[in-house]
Length: 632
Image (tube, rainbow, N blue to C red):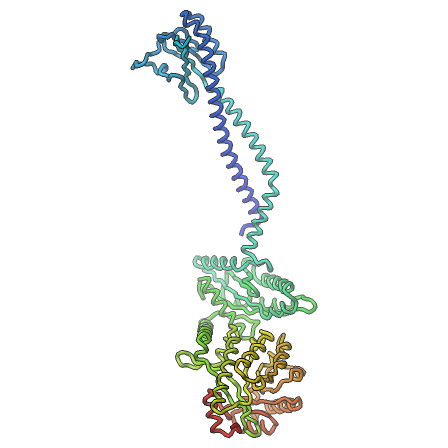
């Protein structure tokens, strides 16, 4: 990009050139106009002089007096524009002449084929560029008595025209100099305006870094250079981890300042020949030139992450963010800018899924993984658009640990693709969370559960309790998610007391969770904490929100009763829950030994393959009919 001084000089030259060209055109038009006007005026004056001389020569012609004629036409020499003249009788014979211009002795009569070219003048006058001949008939009482010929010069016209041109040129030069000096400030303002427009077009207004438009152009130029040079390059696609917390905690004004500091720290890590840009929101990009090997790229990525890991000076408390960096290498991963950006974005996505605050090189495995995720997303969207085609609810029984009576079920979403293949929830639920489809899926699940309850009651099974999972993404909608659930149950005619909503420990401790959980409690829904023991929930929160049950994560159930550590944890959780009057659900129960240990410890509810696998609504009806569950 050109420097401001270069742009000012270029602007000055263009301004001077355009002004000079305009003045040159105006100068030429003025001179031409002056020439036409002055020539016409001069011809009129010459015609008047010829008429006067002709009238004064009439007596000499009538009396055939050469001497008088010579004196009369001699007065024409007093005019600087007349170089000579001749007076002819009516029969064309020369009476007198002055100036030695070679006037003919005899004017030819009409039809004379050997006429002298000098005498072959039109009836009035004939003029060239430098001189000409003026012909005036001398008449007395309407009768022609002779002819006057004058040889005239236009030199005085051109001298006056030259004086005029020099005057105009001088005035124009002075005017141009004054205008150039007086408009200097305007030109500088125009230059600054151009710089401002360029800044708006190619640079981010928050960080001062290059924007996406400039970045994509530079990436394209880098790819073109690689076709000529052997040196490699690297593309970073960078996402700032947990930046939303900065905006939510301190406001967008402070957030913008943090973004600017993030950009400055990134620039401090790379070389002056490299490019760092803000692509939008909390996404950045970087292009590293003249890269020799991937280790150099990894070193820069680590340095960036380390630089950003330092706290940012926000008030009243410092802010901490991280970086997830996806790396694509040029030309190894391609030279098409769009493909490279997509590859780096894929790698960044994988870096985030691995725990954030790290970097990941693009690979064919990543490409396959991301394409698989995209296909899952497309399939989920299609299923939802087709009224949940391929989606169904599996119900896993929850039995009393003491009596093995059916106390409820957990509703679990299942998906069978068009080809008949079942997709694991471990695969499609995270995709739904990331893309936001989980909200629409959650609504579909609750509606389908209500439809299944109608079917089961018609089949003679009236379930006491149904547990439905609520994702952290759904809770981000605020109290609106609770109102949506309440309206769904109201339309279906289901009692809110029949439903229990399961949330994770992390969701319980999340920002804004307090208001949402209060709304669940206020609507009459019971809450269950899922995967208890894997997070950092507060006992005070359990008491405050009147949590109905805790589900001990299956990782603690595995190995019971032989695993002493897990046994101690499970026993402690059960004792704590009973002290808080909270029911305990153990999920993942697969052996009789595990079930007996949990019963002896005082666990309330068991759930797992030992007691029943997740099954469709019709299968659940048959399960209850043939089993000893205590449900009629």
